[in-house]
Length: 366
Ligand code: KG4
Ligand code: ZN
Image (cartoon, rainbow, N blue to C red; front, side, top):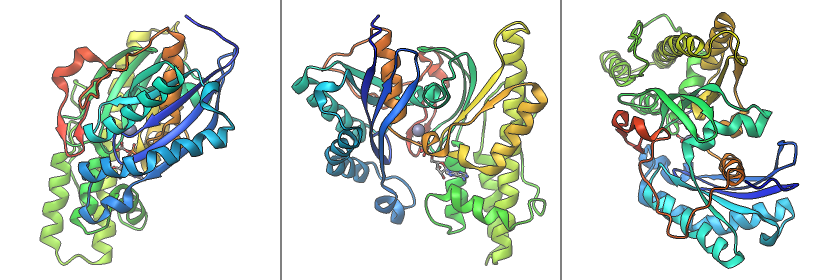
């Protein structure tokens, strides 16, 4: 274990369609400060294909990563010798992109004699409340992004128990597919959310998959198919139809999520007992930007006596500050990786829950 005055870690993230570099500093009291946080999205590169193309993603990471790292270092006003470690996403994700990040991190570590830490991308999301609000485990985590939809009990740094995951599409993926079938552009989540604001969320009664079940898994592909079938029957779609389909889909999806999370909260509260620390729900991932979902979860937290913690949107979506922070935590635990560290396309946060993992368009979900 090391506990110096200040720890500074460079984080690198290239697991999907964002290239990111950031420097995070932790002071002796445990508080985090983001010294720089640079993110470049590849939306333009993938837009015409309606989704992320792995080969294009890897090439785009190669082209920009060096420049982003230089920018992050210069914004933080640091040279490499002032760093304590380099933390890099080693999985799960698209393997070409992961390899770009890993090779770069290894080169920096080798050249400047720094420790290398391979970070699980999901752990970056899971530990973000420590970075943003100094909130430490335990808490219940809902991770909802384009590639992942799962609930984890975050017991401590390095100790996670997955209690639910999607059996088919991730929530963001469902938003993206619904947008695509209506020709709304990519990424679809923000488009669907914006059309939904103008729509009637009760015009169509779509299914709430898994509602009422005891086990805590999610499913969104049946809901997406129901939207597709209704859209095909209505075609050609008017502006009103699109808005109503988006609103009714969004409502059904959020109610389905709230049902699963409500059930998880009850089980988590039973597990923690009444004398433990405050019950907390943390929400992370790009879909945490959705207003209806936030409102539903805020209502649920109030009803069940939970404190709700949603990091700011720019730290809910993919970024390297969360990877740097997870690196800080692992450095404190004395972990180091070798320069032969491999990329892992599939890497469940809770290794024992591997059998539940499923495969999606953006790669392995865990
Ligand atoms: O975490 P993220 O930035 O990237 C990964 O997928 O890893 O999440 C992106 C996902 C996309 O599927 C996007 O459509 C969705 O989050 N998203 C939203 C909203 N903003 C982003 N979904 C619904 N409503 C939103 N406002
Ligand atoms: Zn992510």
